[in-house]
Image: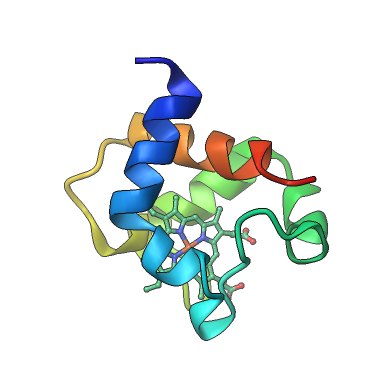
Length: 83
Ligand code: HEC
């Protein structure tokens, strides 16, 4: 499967519950204002934060069974939605 499509699929299953609504201040996917300063940290830092947890963001969104490469695919998808 193409990486962005895989990322989107994993996002819907594991991350959307918080990241579509902005639950607890989660940056809403597609919202440039919310992602701007976060995106500036770069892919590597964002993946590290999503993998290990960051503030109110639980490690791997609470889905510890996800592979590190899955998290990376979702973050790439999230970044691709910023417009
Ligand atoms: C239980 C709700 C919840 C789920 C599920 C969740 N997130 Fe988050 N996420 C958050 C919150 C809240 C923040 C903001 C954290 C902060 O800044 O304190 C966040 C922030 C982030 C950030 C930005 C980190 C940064 O450095 O600014 C990324 C990337 C991220 N989440 C990725 C993911 C991925 C990938 C998944 C699915 C595997 C996921 N999240 C699932 C709540 C969630």
